[in-house]
Amino acid sequence: MQGSPNNAGPKARCLVIEDSQFDQQMIERAMASARVHAEIAYADTLEKACNALSKNSFALIVMDNKLPDGNGADFAQQLALDPGFRGVPIVIVSGWPSPFMWDKAKAAGLHIIDKNDEPQPKLRDYFKRKLRQSRRVGSTPSAEYLSKYAH
Image (cartoon, rainbow, N blue to C red; front, side):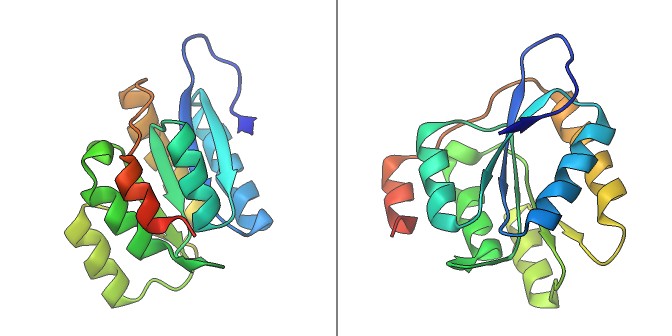
């Protein structure tokens, strides 16, 4: 787990569901430039994300759409519908955002950042808005929900 620069106060936790180390580093740089005090946990598959979500709560979730074991947009949409995640911001960072994915995300109240359109400053601004608003630690989903996605 990585963190942003040391600031006083409690750390918010952010789950990054991303299988590319390059993109993980870009997300870290965006978090550091936002100057928010957050702990970052990484999962490179949806299965590992479910495991992390079953053990921890998070103030923000960032995920890729294309993951080795499934579609991030579908997973994000299901998370957004789970009562345990109401109010937890979820952003999809994708290099291939299709109109269909945009529609799905919008319907579920998710945010999408296009990797091909200056993602780092957009993520930085998103982190500033979402993680500085609240220091709350987030929620955990129901065991029933997670069992649907565990392999």
